[in-house]
Image (cartoon, rainbow, N blue to C red; front, top):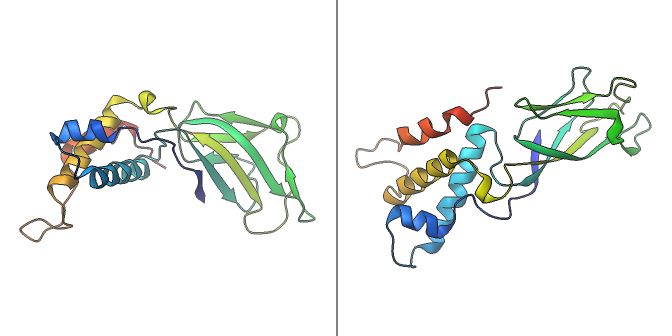
Length: 188
């Protein structure tokens, strides 16, 4: 299970960038456009398994696995902490020399250090909690094609403000959005 601890401090595209793409020159729709930008980021992050702008996540599981632990929000910048409930139920923090972060692969993996392996945990739900920082960095570091996909999606939602089109069919994602994000999708 993943849960967001600290959301991104900024969006990958600004309201002014979105307005320029939409050719909107007034300020009356700024709140609406801003909500579309946030929704587009969230939607595309969920579709791709990525964090675009730096954010902190927590991965939770019931025990350490001998195979390691997948961190399914990439790119992973760093591990903040690994906390676990030991066999007595007392929360412990795993020292950083007891694990290795393999963040060159996607998704990233935490692997037990070669000498000691993983510690034993309580037989309890959510006994292992890993906080990690993910994202490309600041908005300026987000790949251009992801930003362009966001702009297309914001444009689609701005032009089609209902869940269905005039024929009564569902409003699907534009092909351009899918084509732009396809190289960034993780397949679990």
